[in-house]
Length: 453
Ligand code: SF4
Image 1 (cartoon, protein in one colour):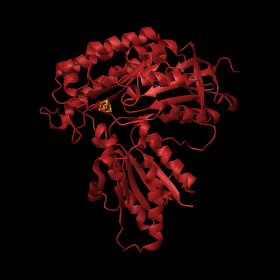
Image 2 (cartoon, helix red, strand yellow):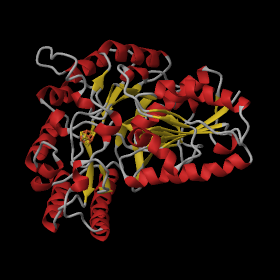
Image 3 (spheres, helix red, strand yellow):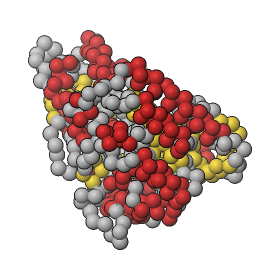
Image 4 (cartoon, protein in one colour):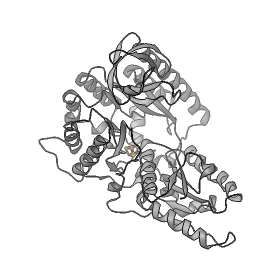
């Protein structure tokens, strides 16, 4: 029984893709292991969004080569976004890689791994290794990410509802690595969710690169409601499902019907991740984001009116080509005005074959770093203050299981997606209940169960 280790870089969609690949391998008799030192097959599921993520994976693959000295049969592979973007060229930097599989071919990974393992039985080490490279497009590949780990006791799950993106944000490589928008059907997603509920899942997070524009090319509006809102409403009716989240949306996809959903669908959690990217209209236009700072602020206002107390988190890029100090100050100002619950701040990283890569006025790294640090201070202070406000209050959480940092304690999430750590017992896991918050740190809340004693 070969042992397989998968290392995942990047976003939740990559995590979900890795889970799918792992499940397929397990169903064929492979065993998933948590360390590369015990593996016969090591797969790196890669991210292309920033250069640093690519370099990390390439560096890792370089180090893995050394393992071949003691384990010559080892199979090494690249999966996902960087594999898609670079294809066979990756063999120039990693000539020892056996497998390169793109984003539309995750469902073929198990076949390729088996083929490579079978070949290992036949060839001697000095024979030529013939790598397998598959980065072709495949119709219907969005529906192949649907299996979940067979492990029991899972309370929350990610569901991939679409793949790809048709937007052309100037900085983004995703349309190239993930292809055009392709949605799964509502029926298929509902069926997958029902299966998860039967296994004890109480909260789902719907995933897509531009998740709130789900199905816009495939399905009609019904009663003025977008396919995404139709999907939310169908899922909301499922007994046993208590919480629904989604990520990552685009601000332009928040039309009235979706905003209204936050007022009408109590299972839709009060948290929205709303990528801002910049607070300067000039930069937003160069980025091709399709909204202005004022329109973004208006949207925040509407969401807060529809669901008071809703948490809003965001992504911001600092140092986009041509970003002046004035542009940066506009970003800073909007961050202050909105008072985000948290934010991912990125220094702009040039990606080949994106519109921004060829723009003049690339910003020096030092300037990017200063803006990054300055904005981080502002966001962290805000995040800390928001958490502190919870001390002395009761919040509803869904207990997900032992805390990752201290397994002797339990961890849950509030409706606004904040982590709460508390002393509890087995019977709390999978339950929704109130916790009295006694303490907060820079990114976590601490408390005691208030009702389920
Ligand atoms: S909408 Fe998101 S995924 Fe699509 S191009 Fe823009 S940043 Fe990339």
